[in-house]
Image (tube, rainbow, N blue to C red; front, side, top):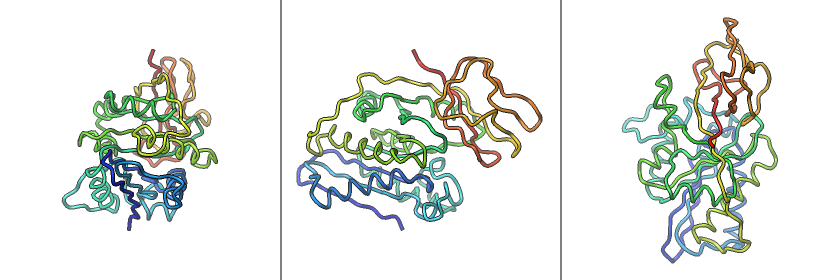
Amino acid sequence: MIKIHEYSSLKDGPALVVFGAIHGNEVCGPKAIGSIIKKFNTQKLILLKGRVIFVPISNPLAFSKNKRYIHEDLNRVFTKNRQPKTYEQKLANVLCDLINRSDVLLDLHSSGAKGPPALFLDFLTKANMNLAKSTGINLAIVGWPKLYKNDKRLISEDTTNYAHSKNKDCILVECGQHKDPNAPNVAAKVISRILQYYGMISKKPIFAKSKKLEMIEMTDLFIKENENDSFSRQWKHLEIIKRGDVIGKRQSGKLIIAKDNCVMILPKYNPLVGKEWFYLGVQKR
């Protein structure tokens, strides 16, 4: 069962849906959403217009087991299924309907590797750019849809891809490392800033917008081919890699060497064989 918390104002306005724990081992979203729900319930926050739908735990069974997913990654199979076969496909059907009833999607995540908060800005519409700037986070990763379109080894039907296909504004926020005590604070501030941006709650205190978004464009996807594939060291999310640096080594002994200066994106230390291991990107000038 998915617990859904919905608040509606008597005044017309945008409808925002906020997802936490699409991946069951990511706790910053549930903690942040829980704190915002408490403020609404105690009237420390008042919804001035529109409607907001909170889903603190979008993958409840995986969350209860502190696992990324049960059968398959929910953020790779996030689309409507006429005959859902897996637990995550059934979840996707319910969550897709919530996006259908909304105008804006905010999807909150955390990463296994340490690194600063960043946005995944998959669709560079004017509305999404303004939404991203409202969060106060000035680092955005772009190019996810193009990367998976060009690399056919894995599919990526994710939350923002579905939302964009339904003409919704959408961003995904990586709030920090899973165990970072500040990650829930980042997530809560992002929720508050977006509610303020749309005029759905009071504008006091006023949060400053990001003046400029620094962009990192994704260029390469590396898949774990063998359980003995290994990193040269424990890379951080968004760490700078210099040309010629040894990133890792395949089980065969072949070294993975950076061809140019680049940025490490979402390194996974213990991924399943056949799944995403890490990504590389470049800073856009």
